[in-house]
Structures are given as structure tokens and as C-alpha cells.
Image (cartoon, rainbow, N blue to C red; front, top):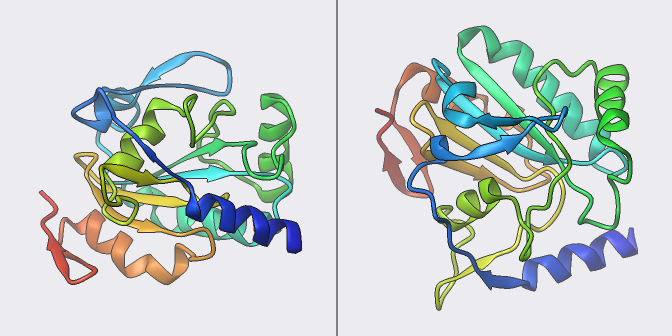
Length: 202
């Protein structure tokens, strides 16, 4: 517990200048679990809501948050929801396995059916372009002097609309279940209230 808390405090304090060369998340290519490049525009075609999350197998939050992800996927997938999970080993080395081991763990331990991608980095100079874009365009992570906060831990969740625009950011301990009303509104194309701002879902 002490080590985990120390790591969270470190990442919360860590800020860096993050720039994305992309104008839309749909322009970005990501590496799938088989090391093939996939364009997000193709992957998310006809999806009404997308959740992007950095996951880890050996985190203290793994059981609770994987259960939350699976429950969310089962409830909303047929309505147009997609979940994209990106394993990351940057937080206390809590995702040490190979891509195959990570996939087997997610499927066999938690019954995951949503896509698991290749292990990646979410903070620092080698951060995945997807997470650079997400962090740079997230109001909750932007700081002064053009700096952007690092993701603090595993299981940070970004809720996006059908156009790839961010609707809401959820910190590691906040469940998707507590935001089912948000997800439903995004799927329905309704306005979403987020920190005193109304975001129009087009």
C-alpha cells in the first residue's frame, strides 16, 4: 500500500509538455495484440461511444476495475459501445507479462471480450501517440504553462463520443458503473453535463 501511494503521489506531481501531431483521435494508428497496426477510424466505425483505458494485471485495482469494465461492456456493447484496453507496465511494473500472457489473463480470469492491445506507455517521451492526444486534449489533465499532468495510475478511463471527442475523464478509482448515466447519454446522442459544462454530442 505504501509503495502504491508513493507512486501515485509521484505521478500526480509529474507534469510535462505534451503535443500531438493529430487533429482527431480517428487519425491515429495503434498496435493490436498481434503487433499489427490498426487505424482507429476503421476500428470505431459506427460506434456511438468509446472508452479507452490503461490496464494492468497485477494492480490492487485489477479485480474491481476489470469487473467494472466487463459489466459495462456487457450492458452497452449491443447499443454501440466499444472498450479499448491498453496494458501498461509504467506503474510499479504491474503489467510485466508478454502480450499473449496479458490477453490470456484478461480472458481467462475476467472473461474479457473487448479488444486488448499491445503493451504500451502512457507517460513520458515514449508515450503512445493515442495517450499523448488524450492527455493533451483532456481539460482535467491540462495545467499551466502548456504542461499536461501525467496519468496517475492504472485504469484511467476516457469516455469519447461517436466523433472521438472527449466527454469525460475518470480517475483510476472511479468506476464506469457510477457513470452509466453518462455512457447512456453519449450513446443516445444527448448532452452530457461535465464539471459545469455542457458538451454537445453531435
